[in-house]
Every structure is written in C-alpha cells, then in structure tokens.
Image 1 (cartoon, one colour):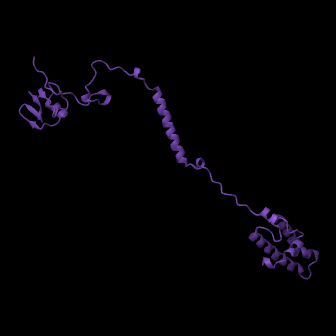
Image 2 (image 1 turned 45 degrees about the horizontal axis):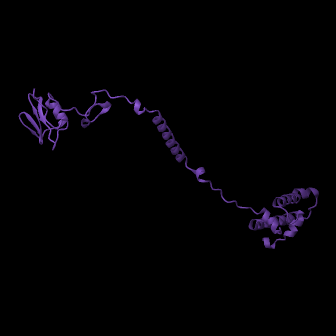
Image 3 (image 1 turned 120 degrees about the vertical axis):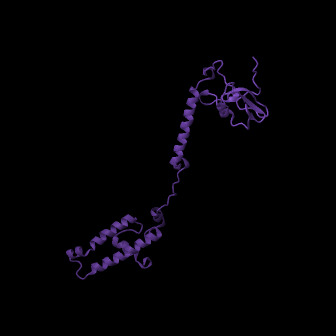
Length: 221
C-alpha cells in the first residue's frame, strides 16, 4: 500500500516538508483531521455534497501508509538519509555489572562472619596469659604421665596400691584372665590378695598392669 500512495500529496495537505520530524508530522495530521471532521464542515456549510468525508478517508489511508513505511524503514517516506539516521533508534549494549556488584548476599555474609571470627581470635590471643603468668605447679602435685589427666587435672585412673579391694582392682584393671585362691592373673602379670585386699603384685613388661609399676613393691620391713 505504501508503494502506491502519493506521499507528496500528503505532505502538501499537511503543509510539511518530507524531511519533517515524526512528532511534527503527527501533530499536523491531527490538526488537519480536526478540520475535516463532519461536524465542523457542517457548521461551516462547506461540505454540502459530502466531499469532506471522502477527503478524510483518503487522508487516513495516506497517513496509515506513511506510518507503515516509518515502522519498516525507520524514517518517514521521502526523508533524506541524514534525517533518517538521526531519528533511527539506537540499541545500546546491555549493561553488565562487574563481579563485586553481583556477588550474592550470602557470600557477603559468610565473608563478614569469617572476618569477625579472625578478629575475635586475634583479640583473645593478644590478651591471653603469657608463659610467665601461668600458675606454678605446687610441689608434690605432679601425677605420673602414665596415668593421664582428666577433667580439672584429676587422674583418669587411680594407681594400684596396697590395701586396694578386689572391686577397685576390677574397676581399674578389668576382669582377670585366671582367678586362683589368692591371686588374679593378667597373663604374665598378677595381683595377690589377702582378705580381699591387695598385698602384692607383679607387672610384667610383656603385658603390664594398667595402673601399676613394672615391678613388685618391696614388702620387706
């Protein structure tokens, strides 16, 4: 339809130059349509034979063809190349944010938590007691390393001693492999009882007792 439309006639009706802008073109079209409105023509008694309606119909057809041409070519029909390039929409490249701007909020929170932990650790380390401020160990309070330390510095097990009952020995040493009349045997090691109390023992290097020295105590007076 645009190829068969007389656009020069359209510009002459609208009193425009072909290089006019799109906004100027639309405004001139609206003004001309208002002049051709049947009510206005009837009031001026210039449309007795119905020519106004025909001219309005022709104008609307020419305008529709011009708008179709503008959508397909990005310019009004008859406009020069420089004018068309000036009104042609330019597609700007899509803005891409850099990595710090699009970092997930969860990563920011995790990083902040790590920094807080590092700072707190540094403060606690700096205000901690120095070696010279550590409490001195009282004489006689040391516990043999073989027994180990538990909560609050208490020994995990109590060393085997004369007078221990069979119940305490079973707790510390466990169930014996062999039980005789007066002696419990733990492999080559053994513990002797008298009236259910420890009176002697032997801790073999091959299978030592858990809470006793490697040799039998000296029971001589």
